[in-house]
Image (cartoon, rainbow, N blue to C red; front, side, top):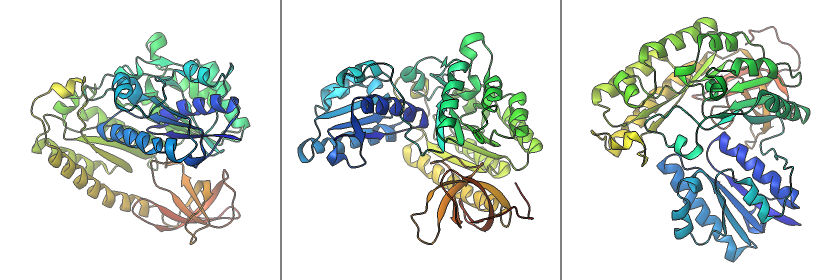
Length: 432
């Protein structure tokens, strides 16, 4: 038996590419292994978004390269965003790599292993949830972001192809479909200048086997009232809004080229909560962007305390060469940015603790993800308000099978996670 080992770094959009690579190599007779020392082929699909991600990618490549002397590895392959961005540098500086495959250059990869068309994508997530990338590339050109330079302009997949993929997933046991893109709200803009996301959702909701449809990355500048209303009234689309706000100070939003101001952000949050007070709003912020003053930071802190976001992440600004932000004056030193990040996350921990406490004794629908590694619990799952590998989980007592969506009574709440008991029958308590 020939084995391959695949390390997929970065975001779910990158994972979709990894699934294509996996499908191609398995078509050539290789089998996946979780032990790189057993693998004849090692593939690293890199992220190149920010400094930490770039360093992680390089460290991963160099660590796995050791298997060329200690294991059976014959082909060390690197691909992904870092390779796209620094192809020549990597080729020169990391001779341990046998094959550099440019971003999404699946034909070159297939040629190595003599795999012929058609290629089948191999699902790398658990059987009950999968990612559906509806477009690639981005036209937003946020001033701090290198993604348009790496991934190119927005290209949306045809609805017919997406529905065909979704049906295939559903037939294979997928209950939760996670819709992803650089900006899902702009799906279809490259075709006729308007969003076709709702049109796509209407068709996806017709697939009977799909129980949850989760949307990722709703850019606030393109998040329409119509889409908010649609999500809040949908029976299948999770009432989960991932809306990366990035800052609250208007002049920084302008410098970041976010095409939105705080007033509109407030309108969006208000409309979501008015339509469905139980909906979860996840957001991210960047601190330490050039020009961020102490007053700007305090404004952001007050905004966060007032808005009480259900889920939140904070990133210290990462200067990326070739982006407009890199050329801006009034840099913020790294220590200050890191301190601001830590302070905001400490505030969010208290906000999250209060938000989680509201679920106490409630009955929630929970998707069962896996058996618990902690012997105290039986299973681990998620509510519709939690995305895998990003948000919190529900630690569960009771009998179930991975992939089931069950009623769970919440018996304890923590800062980010919940503890619940799987119910055998419908319970009379409050339901969400």
